Amino acid sequence: MNELFVFMKELAETYLAMAPYLVLGLCFAGVLHVFFRREFVEKHLGGHGFVPVLKATLLGVPLPLCSCGVVPTALSLRRSRASDGATVSFLISTPVTGADSILATYGMMGPVFAIFRPLAAFFMGIAGGMVADAGSTDTEKTLEGVKSSCPVCGLVDDHRHGIYEKISAMYHYAFVEFLDDIAVNLLIGFIAAAAISILIPADLFTVFRGNVWLEMLVALIGGIPLYVCATASIPIAAALMLKGLSPAAAFVFLAAGPATNAATLILIWRSMGSRITVIYLSVIAIGSIVFGRVLQEVYRMSGGFNPLVLPCHHHENLFTINFSSLVAVAFLVPFGISITGRFRAWFTNHWSRQKPSSPETDNSAQHYTVGGMNCSKCVAHVSKAVGAIEGVNVVKVDLSSGDCSVEGSFADEAVITAVAEAGYTIIKRDSVKR
Image (cartoon, rainbow, N blue to C red; front, top):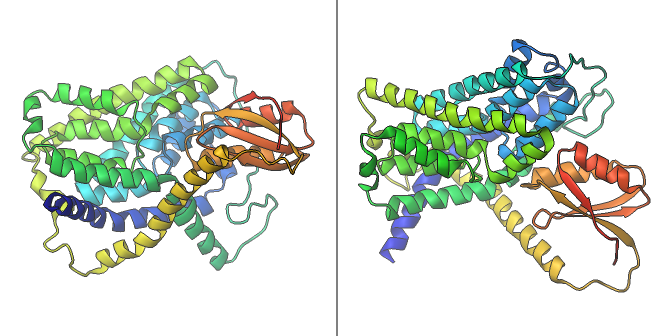
């Protein structure tokens, strides 16, 4: 019982430290979503040279997209004639950090990490983009007539919205759509951080003392195949640092973990080819180690790293009432709704797959297996792409199984092309009577 109390106390302290900064980051994510129309982003990334790479990196650093969410966006940029260099720089710089994770990093790990993390993402994005651009065989490309749907209402034609509608759209994207994507990973991150705090011995990482390179290599090997978003990785890294992990190794985990995972690497390989995949993975691996070592020197020259000054442990009283704690308590409402919604959706999908088909209806549904989906944004991309096909009446996409059920009068080639252009793999299965 005492161990459970200690665990819950650590969990609460981690949440209270991170929640206010996470709320600020989510608000900024909503602003970016409403005011950065896709055609504005895409029209600046065509052609070769340093300028498109620089623009893609500057746009990618603050965007709150995880490693799985960034791939469909990058593929969309590429289909809109963005260069290979701009696409790779966007792929690298975007998932490593974001507006939400920058503020959360400051809240839990201090200003040094909060400043260094986006700077490293920026330079890694530039390096990867220039390498990809140097070996690109693409011809010069221009953008004409690129038009995206309105982030407020979804319409394409020119129109205006009032401030209330824009604020509503910002809130819905930040605290519903985007929060739905990261809520489960955040919860896992909070739980993992609390578990690390009470389960890992305080002297565990003393075995690595004096061998920072080995620490960074272990963090890199562990971080590359895992799926953890830029924000959810923060409490885990902070807890490991409190147990003796060096800032260098913590940075490697914060860079490699959010930027890569097995599913993302496979999707990039299939969609963009082996050359782009090798550049993407190599720059992240080498860059995270190089910048991790630089960060270690920064801490050394500033007198060394003292884990006792981590912001997440500045709680004199867990139940002290202040503005930050009020924000954290208020954030529990949308956070809890997102968590319960994700689990409810999982149970609903699992139950529906177990439920026998109803013989009362004879609607013929064409079924496809879609590969490369990792989150609700992926489901939304696929559903939107297929739903836009003329003759399609109903589209149902299941994240866990990859099943895409389509009803209506349409051509198989249209569905396959639409999903492929959205950046995912697709296989046609036999039609099913249901």
